[in-house]
Amino acid sequence: MLRIGGILRPLSALTLRCFSRTFSSSYVSEKSSVDAVNPSFFHPTAVVHPDAVIGQGVSIGPFCTVGPSAKLGDGCQLYPGSHIFGDTELGKQCVLMTGAVVGDDLPGRTVIGCNNIIGYHAVVGVKCQDMKYKPVDECFLDVGDNNEIREHTSIHRSSKSSERTVCQY
Image 1 (cartoon, helix red, strand yellow):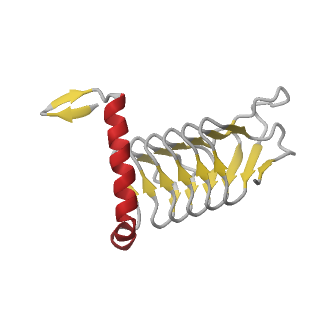
Image 2 (spheres, rainbow, N blue to C red; image 1 turned 180 degrees about the vertical axis):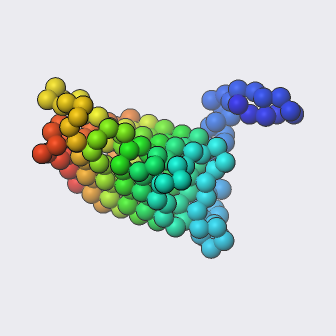
């Protein structure tokens, strides 16, 4: 909902797109001054759990969620509507594009290396879809450094606790 002239109005897709562009371009043009004056930026509509570990120069955009066990490295950018759940670690300079989801609140861990880009509406490190998977199993995903995971991609965790899904491109 958006307050216009004292009246709450629903946000349209056009409004969100315009807001997303404004956030993105203002971040890029003011990045150096943001790092010098305010080490991290959290949009007022973002939900960041107080137990999350946030590095220096992190930018968290509108309508993002960062869970209690999340760790974000220095310089990470979360674009509008991206989410980090469960025991998840992002390395330095990672970018989550609009709508990206990383991690899951199930047992296990997701580790994303440094300098990775997670594309629009990509889903990374969520529950395994293998028939061998049992909900009590800890499952793991490790993504190396310098990768680009394209839009609408789905990368799941391993199917058994004794295994790991490892991505290095």
